Image (cartoon, rainbow, N blue to C red):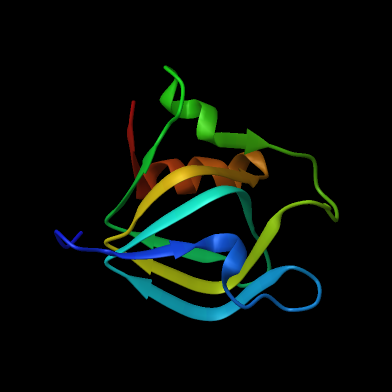
Length: 109
Protein backbone atom coordinates (compact mmCIF):
# COMPACT_ATOMS: atom_id res chain seq x y z
CA UNK A 1 0.00 0.00 0.00
CA UNK A 2 1.22 3.50 -0.73
CA UNK A 3 2.45 5.70 2.15
CA UNK A 4 -0.56 8.03 1.64
CA UNK A 5 -3.44 5.71 0.83
CA UNK A 6 -6.84 6.96 -0.21
CA UNK A 7 -9.17 6.46 2.75
CA UNK A 8 -12.48 4.81 1.85
CA UNK A 9 -15.21 4.65 4.49
CA UNK A 10 -17.03 1.64 3.11
CA UNK A 11 -20.46 2.74 4.35
CA UNK A 12 -20.16 6.09 2.55
CA UNK A 13 -19.48 4.76 -0.95
CA UNK A 14 -22.28 4.31 -3.43
CA UNK A 15 -24.22 1.14 -2.74
CA UNK A 16 -27.09 -0.31 -4.74
CA UNK A 17 -30.50 -0.07 -3.10
CA UNK A 18 -29.92 -3.54 -1.67
CA UNK A 19 -26.64 -2.58 0.06
CA UNK A 20 -24.22 -3.98 -2.52
CA UNK A 21 -20.94 -2.62 -3.86
CA UNK A 22 -20.91 -3.80 -7.46
CA UNK A 23 -18.37 -3.65 -10.30
CA UNK A 24 -15.73 -1.57 -8.48
CA UNK A 25 -11.94 -1.66 -8.18
CA UNK A 26 -9.98 -0.24 -5.26
CA UNK A 27 -6.20 0.12 -5.32
CA UNK A 28 -3.81 1.42 -2.64
CA UNK A 29 -6.70 2.26 -0.31
CA UNK A 30 -7.36 2.07 3.40
CA UNK A 31 -10.86 0.60 3.69
CA UNK A 32 -12.45 1.59 6.99
CA UNK A 33 -15.47 0.22 8.80
CA UNK A 34 -17.21 -0.56 10.93
CA UNK A 35 -18.70 -3.03 8.49
CA UNK A 36 -19.08 -6.70 7.66
CA UNK A 37 -18.38 -7.46 4.00
CA UNK A 38 -20.14 -10.36 2.30
CA UNK A 39 -18.78 -11.40 -1.10
CA UNK A 40 -21.43 -13.18 -3.20
CA UNK A 41 -22.32 -13.83 -6.84
CA UNK A 42 -19.23 -12.74 -8.76
CA UNK A 43 -17.61 -12.13 -5.36
CA UNK A 44 -14.48 -10.21 -4.54
CA UNK A 45 -10.77 -10.53 -5.21
CA UNK A 46 -8.26 -9.48 -2.55
CA UNK A 47 -4.82 -9.07 -4.13
CA UNK A 48 -1.89 -8.28 -1.82
CA UNK A 49 -4.19 -6.90 0.89
CA UNK A 50 -4.03 -7.01 4.67
CA UNK A 51 -6.59 -6.70 7.41
CA UNK A 52 -6.06 -5.58 10.97
CA UNK A 53 -7.91 -7.46 13.69
CA UNK A 54 -9.17 -5.20 16.45
CA UNK A 55 -8.74 -7.92 19.07
CA UNK A 56 -5.96 -10.41 19.81
CA UNK A 57 -7.26 -13.10 17.42
CA UNK A 58 -6.50 -12.36 13.77
CA UNK A 59 -9.06 -14.93 12.60
CA UNK A 60 -11.80 -12.98 14.44
CA UNK A 61 -12.32 -10.92 11.27
CA UNK A 62 -13.74 -13.97 9.45
CA UNK A 63 -17.38 -14.75 10.26
CA UNK A 64 -18.77 -18.09 9.11
CA UNK A 65 -22.45 -17.92 8.12
CA UNK A 66 -24.93 -20.47 6.74
CA UNK A 67 -26.01 -20.38 3.08
CA UNK A 68 -28.83 -18.05 2.13
CA UNK A 69 -29.66 -14.35 2.05
CA UNK A 70 -28.24 -12.14 4.81
CA UNK A 71 -29.28 -8.75 6.12
CA UNK A 72 -26.99 -6.18 7.67
CA UNK A 73 -23.90 -6.91 5.57
CA UNK A 74 -22.32 -4.87 2.79
CA UNK A 75 -22.50 -7.16 -0.22
CA UNK A 76 -19.62 -7.34 -2.71
CA UNK A 77 -20.19 -8.46 -6.28
CA UNK A 78 -17.43 -8.22 -8.88
CA UNK A 79 -15.21 -6.09 -6.63
CA UNK A 80 -11.41 -6.10 -6.68
CA UNK A 81 -9.13 -4.81 -3.92
CA UNK A 82 -5.43 -4.41 -4.80
CA UNK A 83 -2.79 -3.39 -2.27
CA UNK A 84 -5.47 -2.35 0.22
CA UNK A 85 -5.57 -2.40 4.00
CA UNK A 86 -8.75 -2.99 5.97
CA UNK A 87 -9.46 -1.51 9.38
CA UNK A 88 -12.42 -2.40 11.62
CA UNK A 89 -13.82 -4.72 8.93
CA UNK A 90 -15.23 -8.23 9.20
CA UNK A 91 -15.65 -10.61 6.29
CA UNK A 92 -18.55 -13.06 6.25
CA UNK A 93 -19.03 -16.12 4.08
CA UNK A 94 -19.50 -19.83 3.73
CA UNK A 95 -16.71 -22.06 5.08
CA UNK A 96 -15.16 -22.80 1.65
CA UNK A 97 -15.31 -19.14 0.60
CA UNK A 98 -13.69 -18.02 3.85
CA UNK A 99 -10.89 -20.56 3.45
CA UNK A 100 -10.07 -19.05 0.04
CA UNK A 101 -10.22 -15.49 1.41
CA UNK A 102 -7.94 -16.40 4.33
CA UNK A 103 -5.30 -17.38 1.78
CA UNK A 104 -5.68 -14.07 -0.08
CA UNK A 105 -5.53 -11.71 2.91
CA UNK A 106 -2.70 -11.18 5.37
CA UNK A 107 -3.89 -10.62 8.93
CA UNK A 108 -2.16 -8.36 11.39
CA UNK A 109 -2.88 -8.82 15.07
